[in-house]
Each structure stands twice: as structure tokens, then as C-alpha cells.
Length: 70
Image 1 (cartoon, one colour):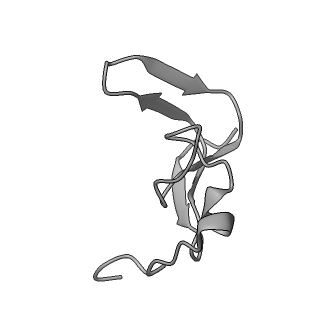
Image 2: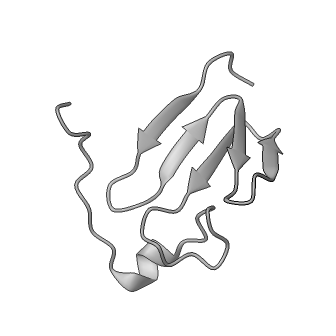
């Protein structure tokens, strides 16, 4: 696993997170990832939120891929 965390915005798709990561849900429950990369939903349609399940491909999600000011 990488020493630093990197976020990659996929065109009309999820955020790809590479490196060490802990996701904390609204109740404060922590999900530590031992995977080298995960995908977080950006379209709002995932049945496995906050993780991507590919719904963006079925629901026609479109979004700018560039970060503001980037």
C-alpha cells in the first residue's frame, strides 16, 4: 500500500482513493481499508453508499471532472 493517499476524479464516475484510508460514517463507525484502492460514489445512486457500485453507468451521471480552481 502507498505511503500517501491520492484522490483521482474519474470522468462521470466515482472518486478513486489510493493509499491508506479510513472512512467514517455518520454514526462515527470507522471502516479501515486494507485494499490498495477504493471507489467512492459520486452520483448518489449506489446501493452500497458511500462506495461505488457502478450505478453511474446506468443512471447517466455527468459531472465536471476538474477540481474547482485546478
